Image (cartoon, rainbow, N blue to C red; front, side, top):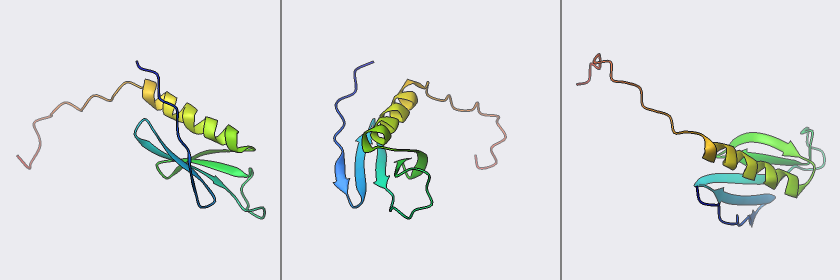
Length: 87
């Protein structure tokens, strides 16, 4: 497996975004009066994947998430049961 190229985080609004291994990641800073437990949140393709106390910590969370997905084996398609009424 080839090493992943360095990730370029681009500022956007109240956070940063990056594409890692073809997936969209976003890090956002929550307002001070936010009910979230940490000041930063991480999102993978729009899905919350965790929070953190520093920007670097949350960017690292995104990188680790992408690495876990990269190491997963691709799912095999389900065998054809022959009961497909559309055929």
